Length: 261
Ligand SMILES: [Zn+2]
Image (cartoon, rainbow, N blue to C red; front, side, top):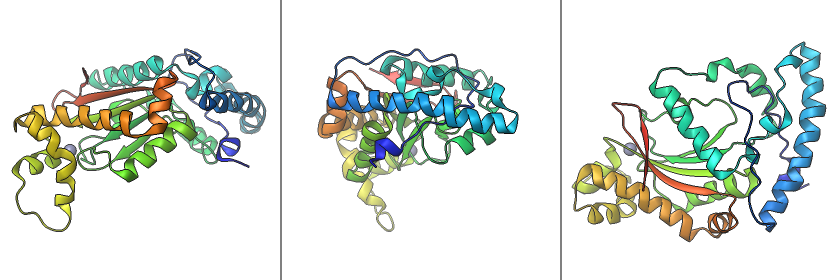
């Protein structure tokens, strides 16, 4: 049994989102074929096993239509919009993720996950990715490392999200006050292996002429470009129209995420 075959979607308790805009990605590429075959499995799973589980708990009413449950059926544009809409709710302090039944979401995602988006963000404790996009369990494939840099391991992780989990949007999220970028600008002596971050961020610092905020934004753009161009998996998904890659900037003070052109 392949990873795809075993990756059953049981996200059936999500109540906070509007029904999925089930945009079919263009092109019948190999990766699309994987997603298509998985959709059949998804529908069978949601309408079968999950329904049985929920019916047994008396919570069958929480089931959503299968199209809404399969988040990987979103178009890349809809997946990105779902992230941005969640950030609007976060900024407005109108969070809805707690309206989801987290216990059921957790139970139904034990064996599989179908997140609609991947995010590469900094490890900074002030950038809690799920919270600032008003998301909970099973929705976002989050990759975090200081400076949101595309190391080989991070690329591998993101490739897993795209190729196996079917994430439709990939966001590289820089943030204001990033210590990793600040340290890279200073390039001073630091303990341990912290300086291993510098080479990844240095091109952004050079491009921005050392300006702090512009370096952070340039770094997000450069890491997004690296992912788009250096990963065959990401590049193929982009070519096939099954993925959208964006760079973005999170402002700690306002809570707002802005897309970077
Ligand atoms: Zn940071």
